[in-house]
Image 1 (cartoon, rainbow, N blue to C red):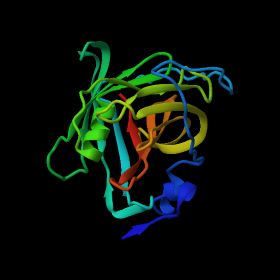
Image 2 (cartoon, rainbow, N blue to C red):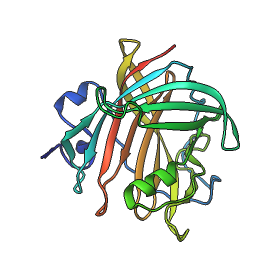
Image 3 (cartoon, helix red, strand yellow):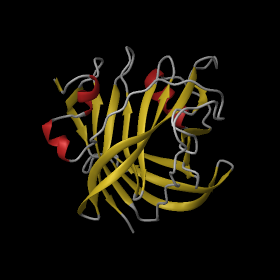
Image 4 (cartoon, rainbow, N blue to C red):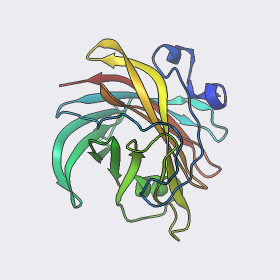
Length: 246
């Protein structure tokens, strides 16, 4: 069974989400070239600084699967947790890597589901190791070699574009990103206190993959991730419920 509206409204899994999820919704299409911003771009340059997590920070999310029509699947609700355990790692040829343990819904097994590796640059750009490989492997069962994928380029102006990489084994389907910029205000608990977060967004899109990502730099957090469903795989919606800063 599923619930929720479609398009803009379908971002809200149920009525209670309105008090703690986003207040502004975005959808965008993208164009660009490999890992470099293209021009001319419209809009103003971003003023986003890099995400600065500390060891011991913990982010708790609310997450739902999306059915083939894009509706939230009520029974799929989980509350995954990110715990930051390193912020100056060297990993896969990169330095100053933030390493995050991702845990599934509390009380489920296994106790730890994955380890995520990010580079959060002072410019506001974000690289994630193995992002494309993970998406393609989960959706299509195709193995691609993991790489450092630039999943956000908030150093670019609004509507600035870049290419993240290819999302097929033949190397022809390019995942492209665009800066969607100011995405309004979100609310979540910060150290137990209801707090307003200002969101900045990017959209990642190819012929088969469409992602929306929203982050905040003050306080630093990943606010929302949405992967659209396709005929071959369900997508998901995840948004920040609480952030514990150390």
